[in-house]
Amino acid sequence: MSYTTLMVYVNVDRVSKQLVGVAASLANKFSAKLIGVSALAIMPPVVAEGVVVVDNASEVDIALMKAKLADAESKFSRTAGTGLQIEWRAALELPTDTLIREARCADLILLERSRSSEDMYRVANAGAAILAAGRPVVVVPAGVKSLAAAHVVIGWKDTREARRAVVDALPFLHEAKRVTVIEICENDQLDAARLRLDDVVHYLARHRIKAEGRTETRARGSGADQMIEFAQNEDADLLVTGAYGHSRLNEWIFGGMTHDLLTSSPICCLMSH
Image (tube, rainbow, N blue to C red; front, side, top):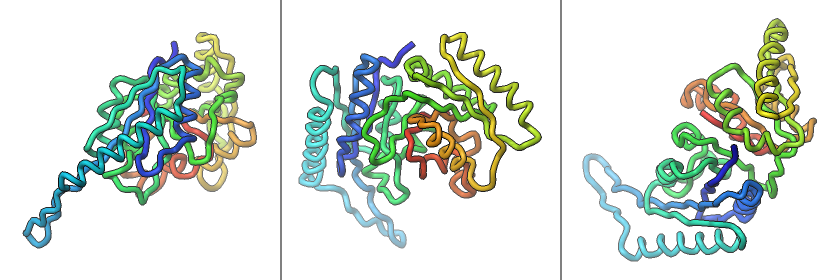
């Protein structure tokens, strides 16, 4: 099992050479095709007190948007370099919708971590893509220049999403030098957690992947912070987790592991829903 096609979302307003470089490096690692995707949407008419204020883009505006997308394609191609099979797809529509639609032809999606203030008409949203793309998503924090995935930490919780994430991450796990499966739980759940991790470790062993299981008692504060601290202390460069075991709205209002990892992890996260 391997990834044969990777997809990276390119933000036209700030084409990240680091993100495209990470995607190109992974495409080379897995001998995969790399597809760059980008989009810009025309804002709909504004309705004020029952009166429609028409603010449709002019032909000049549309031409400028197309030129911006073409410039992003050029930067993507130059950064990806030679020696890779690459492709570019762009559209004048909502970026997240474009990414979700185009995900049908990829095994793995890479994109930058979303910022809460970003414009939905110009930037793809990581959380929405994870929920709807039907593909694993690697969220790359700003400043990350490479992803060797030498030590992969799997954040385990006995849920459908976590099981899906482990399967989706198998190509990374096969190539990793070290794999650790960790479950953070309450003190009275440690024995049960060890049994669960034994099953996961044995499952991976049957896939010819050597992994170790670790349990930690839940500390005060965010579970995501505890997971990140563990991964950093162990020099891990990729976290694998299930995403949105609870509803996204619930996490947006009350917080949760997925939300916290998406907003604060300095380590690349592979997430599956």
